Image 1 (cartoon, rainbow, N blue to C red):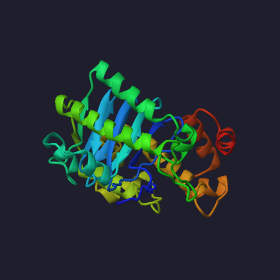
Image 2: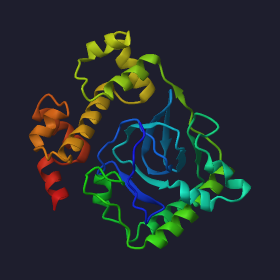
Image 3: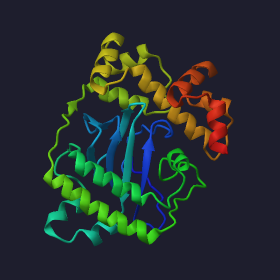
Length: 298
């Protein structure tokens, strides 16, 4: 699914630090015309791209090209990772030498996720570069709540120094590509079983409310087999993944233009009860909904 990141014309891209404890999960498969770069600072993040699953740990630099539908399917509770996106205009203007021509591609040569594991000194340098570009940016809670580019209709990305940010993004792009060219891939892809691929597709449909048994039947396997192979290949239990999807949908409804109440959003997201939502919410954010939502509105 092609999404619009709504980056104002003043900016050549954006950068924000995603944190599991602040960032609402956005687990839908998507792509965008901008080139995306992630740097994992802590924990691990797991993506599905095409028919493969990739898990990336601390120190990994990874790229998502415009043609690549990518789906964040899990991240550890302590995960922190920078997300940077670069508009096509910035890439065209910045990448003039032969060494950078690959960055102009709409589709990467391989279907896999291009990535490398940075050496400690290089990792620290790239991280500090990203840290410096965050000076003058919006509040981290706000950026995380809006997933960087804005869930709410009234959100608009802002940085106090657009020229400085644009120059920094130019430098960051070239710096990280040099790191990529001199590094080596290390994360092995897991080819997904057809039942797992079909499960991900079915669960992406917000209207699906079937039981595990119905889901397994639709995928042509038994409940036990589907649960086992899903956990083995995706890395998390199917129940946890479904709850993460529900949590993402809760935020979509709660932050949506129709301004639903918490209770309305809970049931619209697919939770069976408020008690179930409360348990999952507290496990995800380390505090109950009332305290968390008050913090976000303050």
